[in-house]
Image 1 (tube, rainbow, N blue to C red):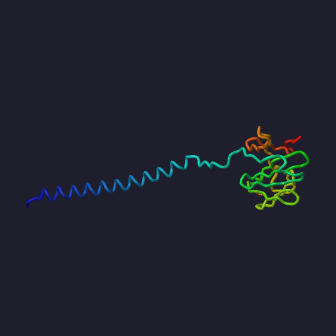
Image 2: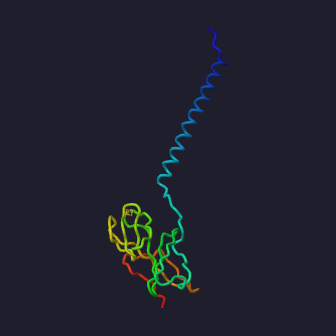
Image 3: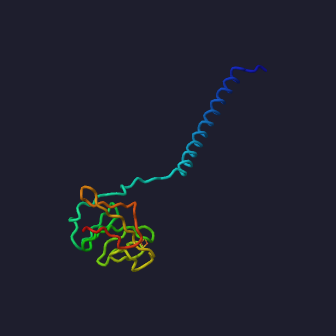
Length: 159
Ligand code: FES
């Protein structure tokens, strides 16, 4: 019986091709899985708004003013000649509180804060943060969210 070496050589080539293709598919799959696995360890950083922002001149806020800056999640309040910036992030689980006639209410689980951010009703246990407010050389006021205080009544005095 005669052996057709050309046919065997051709089968071997086809086998090699199929083997290479299978290895390529498996390799691509492994690379994709490795990429997804590696991304798991990479920090998912959110570059949010800057920590410092201007709120304009002190005269923009009349006595008793309460201005909520939604994109910064900060409430600017003025009591007499003092201006403060209160965080609107609930201290329970981080929902954004809404202004209410008595202060701030959290829509998520019902925490309530007075107009200075003190807890008046749980489940939150801690008061809202206050942020630093200071003047800039131009005379505008600037809020610095990188400097926060857990004690209420952290005002900037206009006079
Ligand atoms: S997040 Fe505000 S009460 Fe739970």
